[in-house]
Length: 84
Image 1 (cartoon, rainbow, N blue to C red):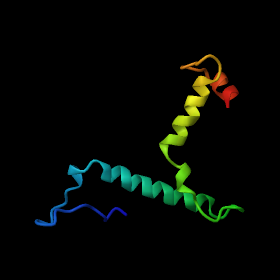
Image 2: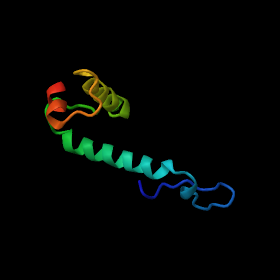
Image 3: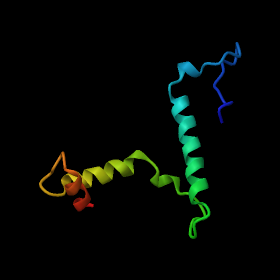
Image 4: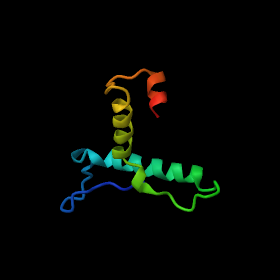
């Protein structure tokens, strides 16, 4: 994975620094592979559904916690756990 880098097709130069997403993309791929290696041998895991591994799901969780109990925008740890 580390060997894959965007290059300028005319000069062959590494242009990784021009594209800020590349390092994040590589990190995401590595972490998904790590996660799969951790859970693939657990009964019931035949595949890793990537649809649920995005920020939208996490934002929806926090939104529901904030809305629980008079729109508490800054819940304590206890309030957060109770709202789940």
